[in-house]
Image (tube, rainbow, N blue to C red):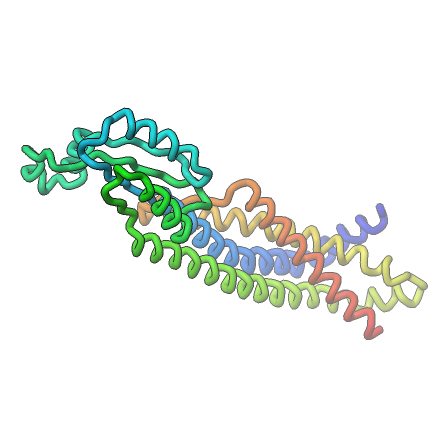
Length: 284
C-alpha cells in the first residue's frame, strides 16, 4: 500500500501541469453542476416558503358561540394533516383586513360584517391539492361553517409548478452530471495515455492488473476530491458575488449536500480512472 501511495505522489510530481489540468477540469465541470444545483436549491426554498402560506379558512355563522368555535378548532388541530388551527374573531378579522388592504382602510372603519373564522395551516407534505380539498371537505361537515375558502386554483398551480421544477431539475441535473463524467473521463484518459510506456514496462516485469490500477485509482480519487472542493469554493464565491452585486439573498448548500458534492467528485474521478486504465490495459 505504501508503494502504491508513493507511486501516486510520484505521478503528481512528474506531471504537475497535467495533474493541475485534470483537477481544474473536474472542478469546472462540477462547478457548472454546482451552479445549477444552487439554483435548484433556491427555487425549492422559494416554493417551500410559498407553500407555507397555504391555508384553509372556514367562516363560521355569526350566532355561533365562541366556546363551540374554540372547541372545534382544538378538534381540527388534532387532524393528522393539520399543523395548527387558529380562531380568528370578528375583531381580529377586521384588524387583519385593515392591515392587508390598507388602500381600502376607510371601507372597514365602521364594518362589522366580517365573520369569525377558523384558519387551518397544514403540515409539510400535506399541502397538495388533493389533501387540501379533503381537509376542506371535512371542515364543511360542521353545521355552523357557512363557507370555506382555500384558493383551490392557486394551490393547484403552485403544486404543478413545483412538479415541473422538480422534473426539470432532475433532467438537467442528470445532463450536467453526464457531461461532467465525459469531460473528466477524457481528461483522466489523457493522464493514463501519458504514462502508457510506464504501464507497458510494469506489465513486462510481471506487475498484475490490480497493481497497475491502484495508483491510478487513488490518483483519480484524490483529483476528484480536490476538484470537488475547488468547485464548492467557486460555487460559494459565485453566491457571494450574486448577493453583493444583485442584492439578492440566496441559500447555500447545507453540510450534507456539500459533502455529497465532494464525494460525487471523488466518485467521478475514481470511475474515470478505472474506466480509462481498464480500457488501456486491454490494449496492451
